[in-house]
Length: 206
Image (cartoon, rainbow, N blue to C red):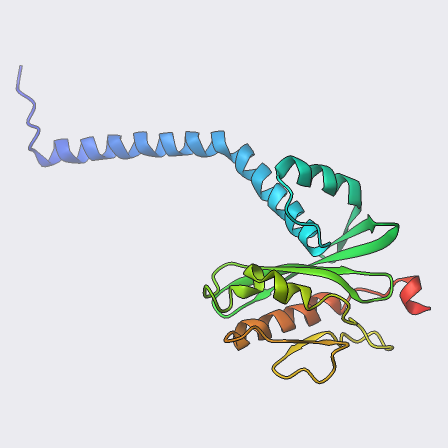
């Protein structure tokens, strides 16, 4: 029987091909095995972000699941945009999901709206903004809390909530994140685009 030549090109190619197939199979198996867990983690993260916009923070996984089930009463779809009908302390609060572009990539967020058409709370996220600068839209709770109480629409239904370098109207404006004007501009555009099609509630119209 001829001795197998492990130094031949044919052997190396076949060995490499078999190894690639085995590794690919193992990776696919692991991915499928972990996917339900990954999907559950993503869903939990979304729920936590919605709770953050409702000023509910510091909950672990099971606590967040329970609180979400308690306060979120209905999920609606508005032309592809998710709207969550919630109830907090007897108030009907709507949470609008938002998507936009920052300086380096996608940004997103949730804005909670009280019956008077003001911001009840807000939470923003990002994919790749600069740490310590643009990333502060996510990392700075203090900056997110500046939105609380701001008026969202004027009497004609136009979005007046905005992010500016110099606040001249404290009722509707929030100052930019220090050193992150372009990311702040992205959040401003996201707010205006994401809130323009949401109609005021009857309480707001009155």
